Image 1 (cartoon, rainbow, N blue to C red):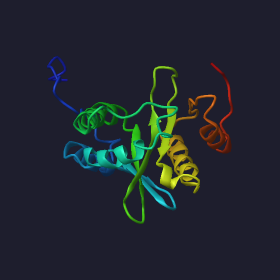
Image 2 (image 1 turned 90 degrees about the vertical axis):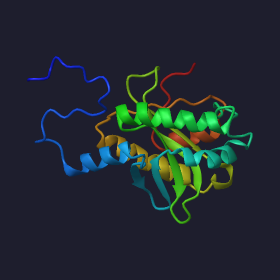
Image 3 (image 1 turned 120 degrees about the vertical axis):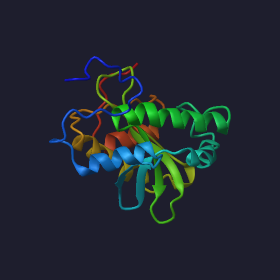
Image 4 (image 1 turned 90 degrees about the horizontal axis):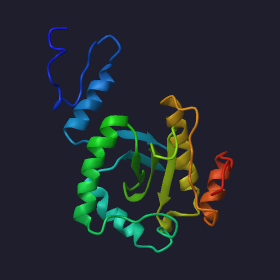
Length: 188
């Protein structure tokens, strides 16, 4: 009560009461403030965590295959721009929502094989599922495995509905979404 009129413009976190805040929350704040990515979840073969600038080289290898950007945007023009984008994204999106697009790694090797997650877009009030798995790892069920894990995680966050946008010609993504239980509500 004594400082409610003061500016907290540069404060990243404010806690009004500690009764509902667990130890895990403080650890995650510490991780975020020290640049350590949050581990989101593991599937049988993959690990999903927040994206870090060190993932950029792996992303450029994945996005180099023409099929990856056939129905979606590519990365920034330069790796330096992409690293800066990731740093800003971590601070603004992860910092505000505690979710977003994450990095997908093979658990066995730690190799970056894709990106997936949920994000708030301008088109819907509910979050959107997004995913891309690099060409060498496609047709192995990894996208299905990862997306199922993310949808379960989204339910744990309290989301009852998740959207996905897919180009009508993108048969692979449409098939995956149907396998996950998505139904087409609107065609543009």
